[in-house]
Length: 282
Image (cartoon, rainbow, N blue to C red):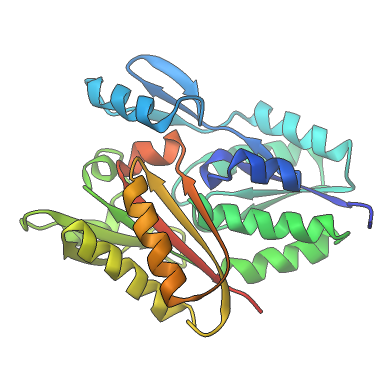
């Protein structure tokens, strides 16, 4: 087995399940969330407990990016094991997390490299997974960089939200506000555009129509005949995740599919809902 030259680090908005991170040797630097006056590390609570606390709180929870020092520690640990460190981060248009990572990288020198995925959640996480697989096979920094740059333009994600309330309160709604209407039981679908910010996709009446629209949208991005990797992410919406998993397996040529629950930071800004990601393989 080739010696690993590159260590991969990411932040917790990537929503990488712990077992996958451990298997691939990906270090995760957590964000934190404050709800009802208490602060928790991302993922520390179950999603059920987190949403219960959020519902009981008078104000929307607030999230905090990792400190520069937290990234410095993670980078130093990586440099002790590998020639180079690559930090795979949430879009800089959606969080200040990457700025903390960049400042830490500046303190440690040219062996630390920070990469903006221009997205979040499993669309970010799967880029980190691909980077870690390349690193585990003995790839150099340049090899890992090529994998990431190629993957960034090929990962597609559609997000379905039960309500825009949390996004609006958090100030991250942007162009998505154009989809807000007076329809009963409206569900809004969004994606993250090429510039790394939220963009509207469509809206649908009812969850079933919105989930079907999510699958249809992805089928416009992914050739259903080609092998592809998928992720189904949910925030306290396991029933919807199960429906989406079955729909994806029936519609696409599935090479791999992971079903995951979002952590607190993503759930704070989105509320309940789901996300569907796809990546067309070679």
